[in-house]
Amino acid sequence: MDKIFIKKSENPNEIKVWHPFNEHLFLRMKNVVGANWNKEEKIWILPKKQTTLPQIFDTFRGIAWIDLSEWKNDKKDITRRQNLRKVELEPLSEDRKLELSNFKKHLLSKRYSGNTIKTYSEALALFMRYFHNKAIDKIDNEDLIIFNNDYILRQNLSSSFQNQLVNAIKLFYWTRKGKKLDTELVHRPRRAKSLPNVLSKEEVKAILAAHNNLKHKVMLSLIYSCGLRCGELIALEPQHIDSKRNIVIIKNSKGKKDRIVPLSPKILEMLRDYYKIHKPKNYLFEGQTVGQPYDKRSLQLVLKQALKKTGISKPVTLHWLRHSYATHLLENGTDLRYIQELLGHASSKTTEIYTHVSTKSIQQIKSPFDDL
Image (cartoon, rainbow, N blue to C red; front, side):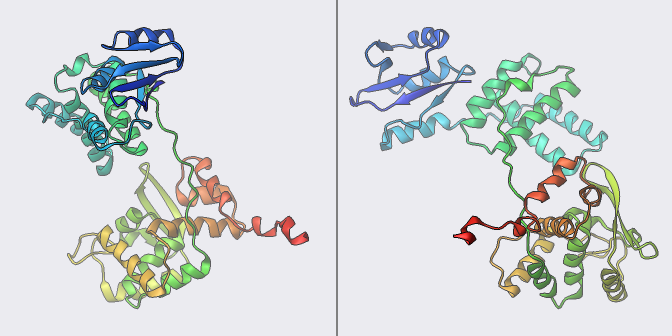
């Protein structure tokens, strides 16, 4: 999408507007009240009025992105810019609440996860509120572009939330209205290619040894030793530990898939000691209420307490233990294909990222600095 730049002006009563040469943009700009083309500077000069910027936004809505980064940096202008970004949304009408309720029921029938249903429903509600004065069936591709540019980007919403919004809208119109919105027209942000955070074996050992509480120690140890996600650990039941085959059965994990992972003999001994003391009823790790799973936030607190005891200042999360498990397996010579199966990755590309953080090969490379 083209950009239009709002420029600084030496004259406090003027606004300068520049855009790459484009006949379509030029003709639209010509229709903005008070716009005069300066041939020498090849820039538009407009009067600095309260109505000028809103008129520019209205003229190029869904056609070009208005860049205000070079706008004169005074308090009045900052206030105007904040007001331009602020979008007051109407509450959902009763008919739209019904549409949203039916969409939730559809997601439930398709067995979407609770988190996905919550995220998609909130995203769709936002979209419906934005177009409160337009019939849902009349919304088209152009409206999706407008929503992306005039709300998502202007509200500076995160790229991940932007993708979730677009996915939710696309799914709603296809499944509930039989209408296919072309989401390719929306300029999606590229996903950041961040490397996974990995701990050294010494750091992992210190974290796992930090707690005297057996339950806390076993939970953290099981996450690392089996490469589990937090939710997978919480959902484990006693029968998922197969002591005869030395495996852990992960049921209905991410992507609605089951998998098995090897169980360390050392962990098995810890689990036996834990079981004798706590005697879990429904879940392997239960909270204060018998029969109910351990709380995720409480588990995060368990890790936080371990970090405090060890003096490790890194912002470690439970998922770091899973990343460390995969990386340490790779450094021990485990084939990448097996690691993919153990982690439950659908694509090998997801697993390949661990090759970028494994130090086994990198440490063998000699720096030319050593030869100076």
